[in-house]
Image (cartoon, helix red, strand yellow):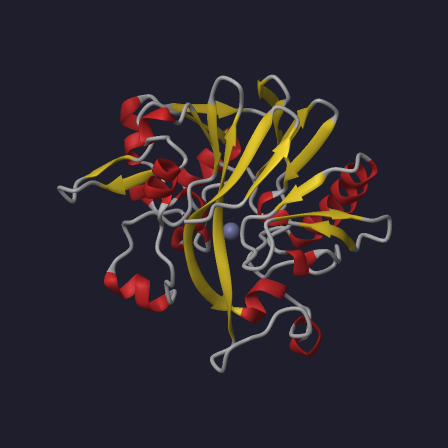
Length: 280
Ligand SMILES: [Zn+2]
């Protein structure tokens, strides 16, 4: 098994497979006509495109952190068919290949709580009972996001699945943030909104090197144009200005942009024209 990785100063980043699925290409590009987006992403006959859910493992000198948790292993037969699940969630064997177990994860950072990011918070064990996938981890979520999980609007009801969050309440493994916070030296969460009301980004800085995980504000490398936003974005005008701001800010810092949903590359750098100048 080959696990892509990248060093950012003292931090080692690994992309773990949180499950592959397929989504309608149109939904991933909002108002952009297919004749344009298809030049950057080939659709199948049913108009779907392949989507990864790459969970980022950050190994620091003294703790292990995950960004998001992938689809998890709780999908029903019907859901697996609807989402055309290809390669299934394989975090546990991939952690094992890196010499780690579920118990070694200290922190889980949730960019937001859509099922494709939060589905792996709770997993079914060998006995088919739900349990926390990372029982020793503190999970960080924005307070606004948690409020919307508790009382979702009609549209969010299809993506905030209660079974992903019940055990977090019981076990006291949850820290709610009201804005920005450095959660480890050089690793900060910043509330962004845009995609969802409580969406947050993760910034990594070590030894003069920077990486930023913009979550669903920058889902794939085909989304470098700030105007190319997803139909899934709840506040698309906010997403456009957030992309303009963060792309410019982090490009000036020669930062890596790490990607969650991209099936071709794992991270990229941008030039001043916001085109990809380097990728892994
Ligand atoms: Zn997503």
